[in-house]
Picture 1 (tube, rainbow, N blue to C red):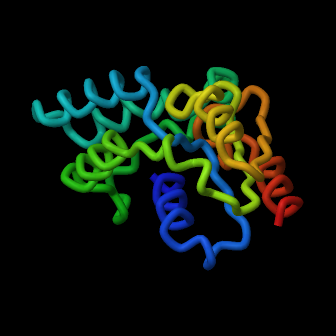
Picture 2 (cartoon, rainbow, N blue to C red):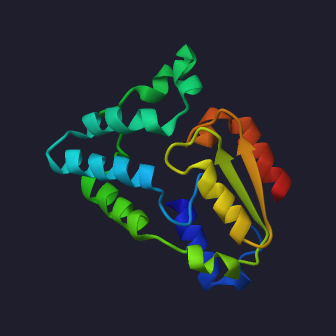
Amino acid sequence: MGGNIAQTFVLTYPERVEKLILAASFAVMNQQARLFLDAVLSVYEGGATTKQMFDLIAPWLFSASFLNEPDNAAYLVYDENDPDQQPFYAWKNQYLAQQSFNVVSRLHEIKTPTLIISGEMDRLAHLEDSLLLTEKIEHAILKTIPKSGHLINFEYPDLFHSSVLEFL
C-alpha cells in the first residue's frame, strides 16, 4: 500500500519529491495477487478469526527459503496480545484501494529519480510488476533482492538498507 501512496503523491506533487523508493510495489495489482486476496477477503468475511487470517496470509509474505530457516519461526507466530492488530475493516478497505489502483498509463509522468526494490520470489508484487515500473518510469533503477519474498526488509534487512542508503 505504501508504494501506491508514494506513486499517487509523486504524480500529484512532483515538485515535493526529490527521490522516490518503491519496495515490493506495483502500478496495477497482478492477477495472482488479486485472486489470492479476493479469496482471503471471502474467508475473512465468512467469519475467520484474525489468527486464522494471519496463518493464511503469512506464508505468502516470505520466500520459501526464509520460511525454511528455524531461526525465522518467530515471524509465523501470531501474537494475540499485540495492541497494534489491524482490524478487519481496515484490512478490507486497504485491499479494496489496492485492488482498484492503476497508474500504468501515468507512470511516464514520473520524472523523479526512482529506486525500485523487488524480491525475486515475491508472490504479491511480482518481479514483472517491478520491471513494468522500471520500464515506464524515466529515471528508475531496479534492485532485485535474490531469494527474497514480499517482506524484503525482514528477509534481507542489511541488503535492503544498504540499497536505500546508496540510492539516497
